[in-house]
Amino acid sequence: MNEISIIPIKGLPEVKKGDDLASMTFDLINKSRNEIKDNDIFVITQKIVSKSEGMERDLNKYEFEDLIKSETKQIIRKRGDLIIAKTKHGFICANAGIDKSNIEKNKALLLPEDPNKSAHKFRSQIETSSGKTVAVVISDTFGRAWRKGQVNFAIGSSGISPITNYIGKFDSFNNELFATEIATIDEIASAAELVMEKSIDIPIAIIRGLKYESSNENAELLIRDDQEDFFL
Amino acid sequence: MNEISIIPIKGLPEVKKGDDLASMTFDLINKSRNEIKDNDIFVITQKIVSKSEGMERDLNKYEFEDLIKSETKQIIRKRGDLIIAKTKHGFICANAGIDKSNIEKNKALLLPEDPNKSAHKFRSQIETSSGKTVAVVISDTFGRAWRKGQVNFAIGSSGISPITNYIGKFDSFNNELFATEIATIDEIASAAELVMEKSIDIPIAIIRGLKYESSNENAELLIRDDQEDFFL
Image (cartoon, rainbow over all chains, first blue to last red; front, side, top):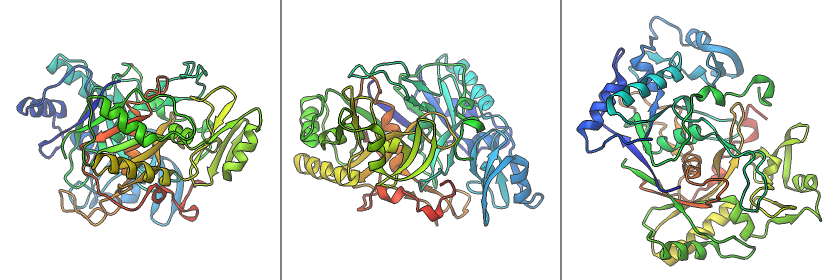
């Protein structure tokens, strides 16, 4: 493995419902000194995907609590104002992933209906425009059990194997590796966050130089089945 | 924020008890075409830190289960062979962080006694040798609640603020950010893992180009207090 670059894509205008994110991104890269290369991985924050897909809700019309209910499959924990919920997609996060920051006042932003579909659409368009093979990860910022602070996770993906599997391979001592499956797209989402400052809001980054496996599987693969989970 | 590089440091010989990791790393970088720059963040896998600090245990002398007990403050979950334990450092992970891969057969490797101290020592030595200001993160690969696959986490750090705090800052819509604290050193550990392939075992990477806050705080800051945690 050689060096990997994390490249922030700056200058995207404010995204509105109906905007074509892939075209906007392609134009922005073409106008800058950057170019798209084969095997670039585009990491896109959920916020701009949700905005382009019309997932904003007016808090003068809807109660925040009702929005949370509408997005929730199961309440996992509730303490005071804090609700940790499993979303209809299967993500476990605060407020079912609904956000009130980086959006106009009195608005709330829901997660995309189908982040894998959003990732796939973005990838197809970029591949058609650029003639390059790329992958896409849609990221969101969630808290974790046991550890303070939030990190970015992959909530959707296209064109990249979500997991790098070392099971059955051998380490340098010729021990067979039994339990190492790396959630590569979560690590990619976290890596991209390092160039996406929350306050100045850089919503897209390219990870370049990672040798990844292409795949038809998507981020859904990372959601653990309830019966296999110890912490529900 | 500009581009960030993740640079694998290749060619480290097999690490043995008593080895001086910082000197070995410094020599390796000097011999290669790389050089150490100000604000480089060294990410070092726990395995080589533990090996250099003599944390290998002979499984002909010790029962694996007894080693787990000796490292455990609290058993969090147990199902069949799988034990999820809180280590004496406060990490919640399988087998109290004890590993049987990337080590000679019939050996097990415990976590470092004090990973923050290990990080601090490595940083001091590199800073003295190179004359540059650097930061250090010691990483390990853990599973997570709710999601399949493992990612790298920061178990020790020195010279870098573990959390980037946006609370009280304002987003581009002039909303005050209330709840965004990014666990930057965990994201750094995950980013570094992308160049550290498990089977060929690259144990050190440099993250270059990240504008980070220097700090006297360390990775202990990321451990959530029991009474604040919903998932114990």
